[in-house]
Image (cartoon, rainbow, N blue to C red; front, side):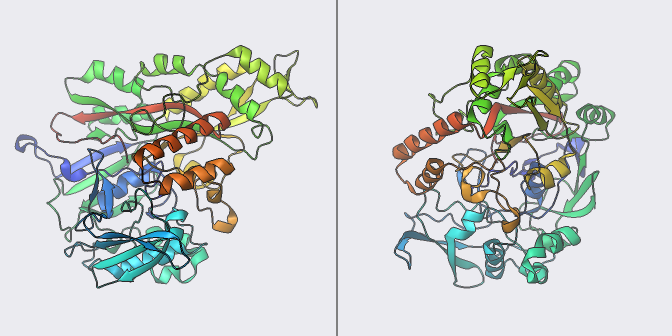
Length: 539
């Protein structure tokens, strides 16, 4: 998957901030609710990490605020039409493509070292190693050769011609001059990389800002980079302060301890609506719908959840429309699949799961879960239908939604137990290593038409053997889904691709490797003096 699907990956174009002279400041303090589990750009997916790295790095390609693919680190976007991309036959007879990029000649790492093709090759070598723990796996597998023309120009050779052949958004460069030694033992790389052991090293960063201080669980300090080649950053210093409890986050904003609350990782919709009624005179509040998909990943190795009838019963047992209306004032629409209606590939005829207690009863009866005298569903061995649900502790919305889900399921004889963890543990270990016993609630944030290879293809299930690379945390295995993902990637005809996407969404809704909840709208809480921030609604 060329466009990372994570929770994760949102490029915050902080150079778009502007401060009127009458309120000039040299520091901006941003409040968010999660602390990154790692700062390595290619290991683990977590939105908090991506939020910070969006200010410290620049990808080769990215989707802009208008949802168009553009160059950032490269000088020109390669296309077949401009001759910088050329279909070719691979050595084993496949239809592939060669794509040529040129690094901006003024691009520098934060320590002044030029960014060169040496970094390109090193990043590729790390990504291709099966034990490095780097994602996305398929991107590095498909990229079978790199030709280096000079220090700035290189050609990537892929073993398949995909519709997004020039989108290398997930090819996040690593500094060869600093991190090569840490890669001497690939299996230990994720723990020995300088992103873990020397995070404030200026040479790790190449954006308008670099990380100058990290206090785990508390804050990250960013300072303007003297080697940045673009427009001068609007602030000399940005502090990303982590306040996991959203009520405390609001209190810190009102007290002046923070200047703004990030929409991606900030207040809940209900909090923002209430906040707007009380403080619209002091702050600007905007709501941006986007491609953030709140859902519950199901561990399909769990014998209870391995039964599709139980999965369907769980979804029919939720009144998601009422949740959206009562908790979010209808601003966060119910999700029927993993594809947002804002995306052109969305299928309108995807199977829907309305709240239907009678269907729940029929499905559970058929699956062998009968209602006991105490109202709890039990199997033939008398074991109760008990499942555990986990999410990020301190996130007011998720914890509230959890309680509603628990209550709705309880009325249908399903015993849901809540056990939450801090975000850095939940994402850094529990989810990424598939340690959640049953259900994990979180969000995926994607780019437009983002192929879900890393989240739904059976080759991308994290295991000890691949050092937990991959994001198919559910363990979903479906032959037709695998084939569809592979077909979509190489289908250049837009209308034919639309039909393939339609079938993918139908399989997702029929099989339910995850329970779709709703598509998020992010509330941005900004001081009146902070203008020109433009949320994108995608990565």
